[in-house]
Image 1: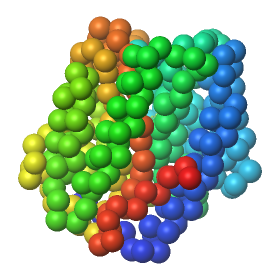
Image 2: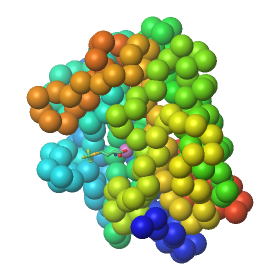
Image 3: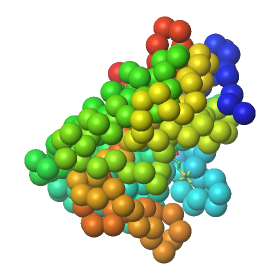
Image 4: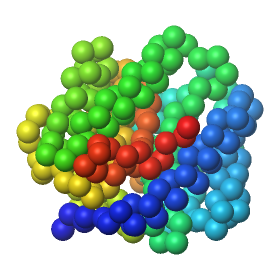
Length: 249
Ligand code: MF3
Ligand code: CO
């Protein structure tokens, strides 16, 4: 079943999203060479507690942390570690906020100090993929229109789109029935309707889109060791267009 949310329910999710966005803005200020992703994870837990919110990822199917922290060739579901981040690294911090039972999900890639031109361009293109995809999330369009937009843009610039992980419907559950691939063909897949709430979360690689999983059973990294970036928003599909519930402005 594809859930349709009321305006009130979308408002509840927006409240969760506001806390999540504020948390990302704090991470942006504190992230620098020497900090560990474990420290960021602890900060997130404390920050959410202050707002009576909880980190939904912790305990989700046994996932042990409040955040996913994916460094360089790690694509997603990286475990926070005690290893200091160093100048030139890129790291994606992904978290799901639960406020009174309603969820919001957003991942953001961060540069540690000065990074290479390649890494900078990858981050820029990945963020552009997210916003281009969001523009296609309007009633009457199909799921495939979102993926087609992202894939054609990324590939036209020589990047690859991860296929093994997708966006998803979200509400009171982290993952509901809709999968939102970041590749695809126009007009394919289910039709988007007002009241659907989904994530769009392109993972874009410099090299191959193929993934390998670490022995921890979670962390995905690029099969060729190339860099990967990711930006993710939770958004509602409305007659007035997509409303981003996790926007950081
Ligand atoms: N936040 C991720 C997503 O975008 C899900 C993380 S899985 C977890 O779908 F186990 F880490 F929670
Ligand atoms: Co996420």
